[in-house]
Length: 102
Image 1 (spheres, rainbow, N blue to C red):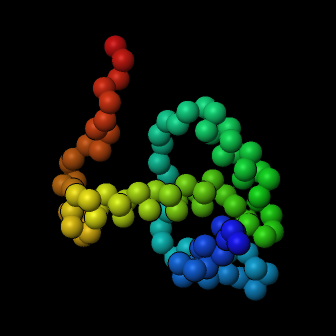
Image 2 (cartoon, rainbow, N blue to C red):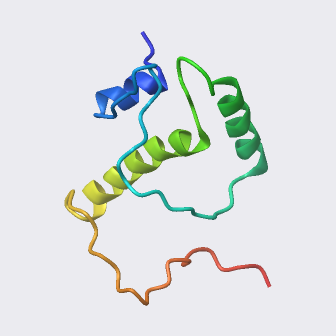
């Protein structure tokens, strides 16, 4: 049987409110800005629009959070012996990646 997003979050310790909606996380949220393929963004928005109510209560943040955390755990295991990566210096730019087209 396939688990719902709500069930997966509950299994990871996310509490729910009395009405069954996921309770807000106790961690601070931060905005990020990055580019994704347009077809992926469209499909994500369609899924969230379709699953925004009961029983999933899906948001774009919740849709992205799980896979990003899983990938980060994989990277830690592969490249850092499963430990968190060291905190970067405050002046380190994190927009390192593919160079922009000229």
